[in-house]
Image (cartoon, rainbow, N blue to C red; front, side):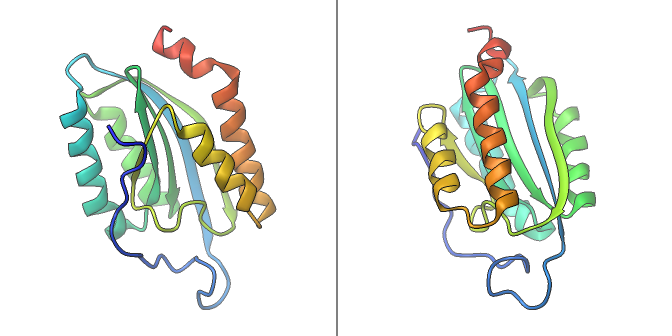
Length: 163
């Protein structure tokens, strides 16, 4: 699995720099879950393909980390759309033990405006988050990224994976 799989093109979500008017509230949700035994790289590729098809329709962006049988995902977009997606993810038979790590709604720019859904390998997630933190201009974004790094560094994801 590649470290980062890039989706083509740039999608406007109306809350990116240079957008018109004030930024709307942006809801973000971070969760992790254990993948069921039948989830393999083809299943993950299917998840990414579906997300890239539907997330732009609903104004959702984010990233997905998959490794050691664990999904770790950051979702951001309109509250109703993100919560509806989370309801579907909790019912998805490819997930077990879905744990919500953080949820918030604030007026800020997206952390991942160009990513309808990016797949990041577990080996590279820390670097991706640190790079995003190093370039974050919005203090709320910086705090959200620090929070993600704290979750990653705490070891709680490894504990969930049974490592």
